[in-house]
Image (tube, rainbow, N blue to C red; front, side, top):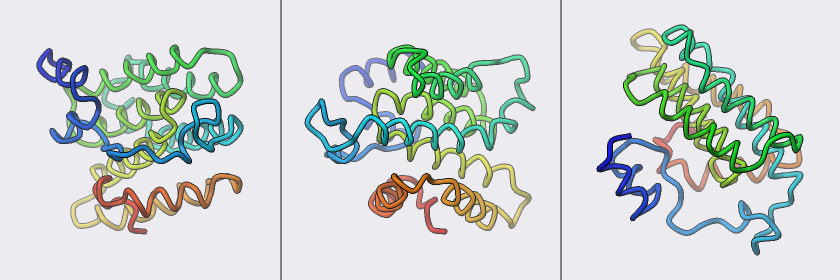
Length: 194
């Protein structure tokens, strides 16, 4: 991330990055369903963990699109591993969040499917910090699949990936995520039209 963008993130938060097309857009007003009980929302720890695990599944499904381009760069895989380790209490939220940031750093000089796959892993890693990043992992994974698909098959490939992801949603968070997809589809590149 260049220093100008870094300053904007500190001043304006992730919305600034989204305006520049660099990251998934979070809603301007946080949805209390994605804020933990201890912070005044309604999200239980168990459902927060399920969101992180589902995000990790989505990101891992496209990880090879990054690893074939950068086989020696472990950062996206480490972010996914940290997301899972966080749910087991093996790493702190800060460690998972940092691993997610490093994975997004791996995307910096890439384009296309590999870049989106690294961002998917990064978003999965930061779900421990902000649960609403669960859609970032899913959306970037869909974007990765679309970018990797042959000419003329991008949309169909994206719809298949979206359905694949939905088939893996744990029942306790299924309706929450499907509603979140409906509400944020427009700011997530409309990838959830499946």
